[in-house]
Amino acid sequence: MQVPLHPMIVHFPLVLTCILPILVLIFAYMIKINKMTPNGWLVIIGLQLAVVISGYISLETGENEEDTVARVVSKDYIHEHEEAAEIFVGSTVIGLVLSIGVFFIRNEFQFPIKLGIAIIGLISCYQGYQTGLLGGELVYKHGAASAYEVDTASQPQGILPTPGMNTSESPMPVEENESLKTDENDYGNSDEAVEVSDEYKQED
Image (tube, rainbow, N blue to C red):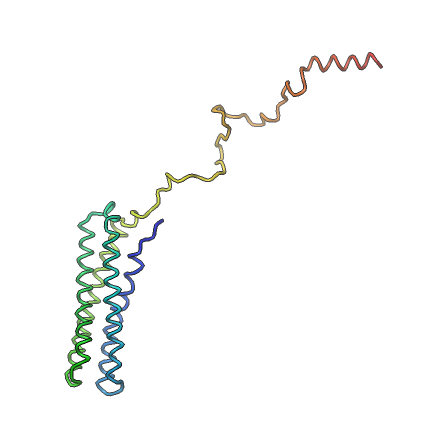
């Protein structure tokens, strides 16, 4: 069975998106009480960037495999999943832009904006859930995975014969133990063999 690339990529942005809102709140609070330097926010920016990049790659791989899946699934279901994915990636882009922007403003204004970024992260989590739900329905409800199944009926079978199979080139079935039957041509005619035996007796 051919394994498509899309389902192997989509898990990265979904998992990171679920983790980010919690990390945003932790980093924002730690920076606010001076338990962490403002440069620690660069970790959040890096994670937001990873979500956007992996989300974009997921979109591209999904579009590349759309024609294959469309052979077994209605395009309406595919486009519904694709639209949800685009909204999800768009929300992560907004979170990335705000995360970069808040890094350059004054500290007293950062915390409320960071709370807003966490809320946007929760919205992204919901959009990611919707996207994953529609993708799961494509596979398990509408049979999208069958587009990648190998047609085993057209594949050559093994060289060993199956029980009951006639392996002889002759179209007629071969009787059991036929190879053990005496062939008269192997040792000549049976009457001739008797005559030779009588000749030896007379000579004695």
